[in-house]
Length: 463
Image (cartoon, rainbow, N blue to C red; front, side, top):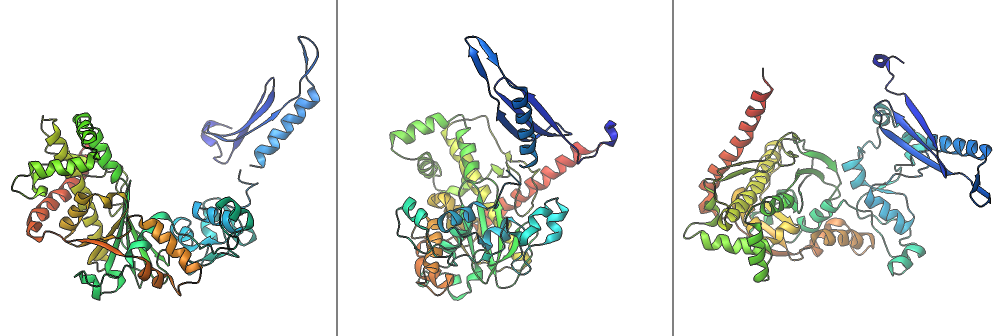
């Protein structure tokens, strides 16, 4: 076909007959290999150093590989699973899907089910066949019991008794939210004690961070995923904000600094992590001021991997303003502090978007690896102006998963009951309200950074 008139749906088969096998590939008009197949061909050695092959065998192999290209890891697939649902299937033999996975990742609607028109629009209408059997036509809420529990084969592999209850699963971050958000907070002097659970925001912070807010009615928040019905806590709508890099960003800034080898050596000598050492070093250099005031002239915009929420702009870049020629350990510690603060300012921006849309949040519930860092926790309290609740058990994702199992076993009447009984408050960190004016000014600078970045991009795109 002429180059300008090519049908974007055209594909081509390339066949290579080699000495030991026939190989074939399905290639599109951009030259991208879409599928591959190979088939061995026979060789005979009637005497030393004499080799023969059969032309019939070669042709048969060509036929096999060509047919295999048409029958792809797509036509042969019996089911397509999200990972949590795959693991549930391996454990129970049940192909039912978790409402959490399908609603949050697969465009499934808790009220209306699958949308035929969507799959047809994107060219995957074959998934509609047989009542969506390949991607799930039985959908269960998190914590529902799957089939007859562990199969004999899975029980043997796991070292557990046959028939133990297995729950419909949650995505890991959602399990973390479930593990913290329902804790009994009585006696800790928190505003959320007399408020509904919808006043709580779960922040699951590790390599990246997720911000889980729930509501009784659907709330649409620009730049924030959802609302998803019953995707985390049954009967509640979920909005899911997030930051693409948090723990990863802190590592990037610290390990990329010229003083990192010195930091590593000193931390090792004290048998401390580099972050515990940095926190203690900040306490040494702050003198009489609050530690957060060390960054009065250093500001960071943290979107080194684009912005997920609430700006939803993958083109945004990271920014640092206020750098000096110094590259000593003090300089590294202050840059680390400014990065932690920037992540907390990002959380404040997400909270403001949630509240502008109709959420009412009074308390943060943190879990994940970064919640073990006292500086990270205190900065979130100070910068958002909200108390931060930490779980008694650090591994809140695992507690959340166990809550699902407890519910599936029938030991609790509901997920909410299991949450209230199994989630425990470990520590509450209150904001230093006397520092509010300082952080409000830093937040104004934070917002100016992204405003200026967009202005720079507009200048460079202009004539």
